Amino acid sequence: WGTNEGLIIDILGHRNAEQRNLIRKTYAETYGEDLLKALDKELSNDFERLLLLWALDPAERDALLANEATKRWTSSNQVLMEIACTRSANQLLHARQAYHARYKKSLEEDVAHHTTGDFRKLLLPLVSSYRYEGEEVNMTLAKTEAKLLHEKISDKAYSDDDVIRVLATRSKAQINATLNHYKNEYGNDINKDLKADPKDEFLALLRSTVKCLVYPEKYFEKVLRLAINRRGTDEGALTRVVCTRAEVDLKIIADEYQRRNSVPLTRAIVKDTHGDYEKLLLVLAGHVEN
Amino acid sequence: MRKGCSKFFLEDERQFERWNDSAIKSLKAEFKLFKDVVVLSLMHPWERDARLLKKALKKGPPHYNVIVETACTRSSDQLLGARKAYHSLFDRSIEEDLASHVKGSERKLLVALVSAYRYEGPKVKEDAAKSEAKALLNAIKNNNGDHKKKAMEEDEVIWILTTRSKPHLKVVYEQYKKISAKTITEDLEVELLLKETVECLCTPQTYFTRVFGTALREDAKEDAKKALTRLVATQEDVDLKGIAAKFEDKIKERVKGAYKDVLLGVLADDRK
Image (cartoon, rainbow over all chains, first blue to last red):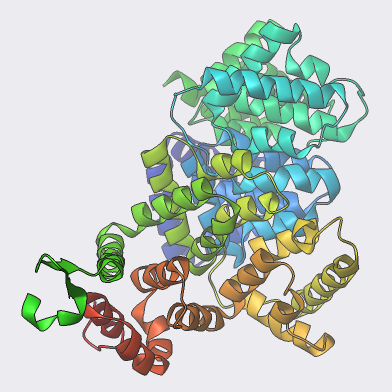
């Protein structure tokens, strides 16, 4: 990369997806190599990884992140769930299409092949979903399904078919209504009831799934907080979240971060990172202000 | 015209030529088949498939084979289109409706089948196909004696059949023949829905032939004829031509009127 990092940050950092695609095309024509190839090299440092991820089309980026997740062990389930639940139905679809194109197989078969037990039971339907995206809500259904969820959770049947069915097939609006009813009727937030065993990883995934579906900014705030304080095992979380949310809802996440930590996200990033990595992160986070 | 169709009319004591009741019924049935094939053919395929799925779900378990047929014989993008159309038509996703209305052991299989977005390239994993054939064999053998759980409820069976590409599954089918005395479909005689799933995915020609054959029998029931209508309206001619040719004589013998022309039209070179 030589000494042009500053220039690269300036150029790529401030471009939208369409412009970045054009840059990528030009890069390939100029250097005879796809930017993606460079990503395959294991030695990417934080800055290079952020840069290259940012240069990718969002669908390809999600496909790449998902593919990496199917090959790793720790926190990989969370990344798969995150992609499946925080993207729109069409964005998830485009990611699956990009996956076909790049890896010559489907995301679903990789998830099926690389996950087991309850995790597979939850993740496979999540990545296969194509949710209805209307705002209509059926209150009768919300009541019925809130009751169903409450019964299953009380019985500790966390991976029950019905629990999974509700979370994996209902529209986000419907799930929201159901969970509101749950709280009104049974007193607790569903996630509070899902904290029965703090060490249970499946429960943790279930709680994160709920968050991603109804208030993703809270989910992302926590991921960022843990990453910045070095308290998680989610490597690359900072890069991933800033990169994937910069053109979506990073502003809302940043507001949530400030609310929760009394410190602006940008300041926390400055404290925790340095060099070109820090510069590019700030440009992307600053995208928010544009 | 009436003079020429004497067998339809009976003269009674009032010298009034009335229609023969059973003749009316059969004429209406033939026209309905014709109407159905026309309506199905004219609708946008996505809407058509969304409506087929909805209707099958509403009619219940004996009609779930339509869900299997639709989910398995369409291309990935056609099935996706049906899912989009379903959103527009019914304000729900097909997955949520299936998941909440199908109560029996077929629920997991059906939901997974309609949610599939299979890779469509030719690349196949031989080693994986071998071990998956073995896994299917085990699931079928283990559950033949045990009537509590069916093979179609096994997670392994479901994810193999609902996430792998069709070319890959065809290899799995071949591998299975090497390790078992029978084909997968022969071993699945007791689980009809699962058998049809495998047929539609791996040997669609066998499935189509069976539908043609059953519909063109002397004692063919309404549902059998409807199944043929559906096939003719939804499948590509190129896939049906060879089969229709084998049945050409039966079609000419058993089917009448405009509906016959539609069936024979599959054989014609210049259609669509």
